[in-house]
Image 1 (cartoon, rainbow, N blue to C red):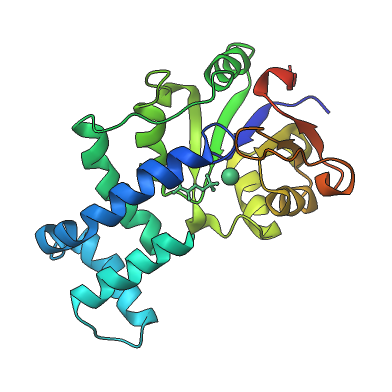
Image 2 (cartoon, rainbow, N blue to C red):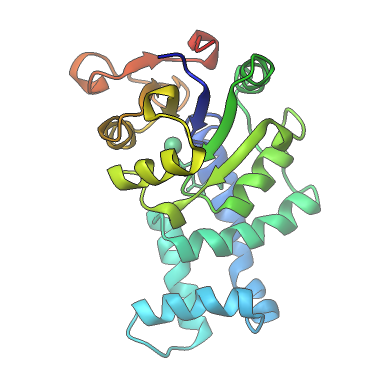
Length: 232
Ligand SMILES: CSCCC(=O)C(=O)COP(=O)(O)O
Ligand SMILES: [Mg+2]
């Protein structure tokens, strides 16, 4: 089957894990108390703070919610509420040019090449859709948002669940085997493969110094760079 769409993960795939862990997460952790104090009454923010409070036994002080969220950042929890709030906080950071997002040097040229060849490009990340747009809109390689036809986050389901990929396939509107999912996490690729989607394990040496070979690839095609992927 010809590949007609690429679905890509972000962290560890287009962009380094260290950018997310060492730049984005500490920025959100530091800014959280001020953000909640300043914007905690806005309905779009309150909704997620209340969701966190509910998971912690119901009504609790905003300062407690902040502590819970900071703990989740430290644990790298991929919780939809945390991801939504992080996205709102990072908007300030990108806007005031505190940072731009890391893009592996091979990522933007390959995305442009695939787009020019007629493939449709999509993102699926645990980061919220607004956070994804910010990241690709303020990247080291410039504004890449125009390349993408659609964006998916954990509101469609968890990245290690088969049904999430089935929903994405339905939304894209192509047969599953005409879509190629790129990720650094084998459990995500296993779930995509279970839904009939093609898979490529992106094994970035900067993020994964020990190459994942043999059984560790779970049978997924393995590359170290987008330059090695030729779906056209
Ligand atoms: C796009 S926002 C920054 C990344 C992030 O918060 C995250 O959790 C990334 O997870 P991924 O699913 O892209 O590995
Ligand atoms: Mg990833």
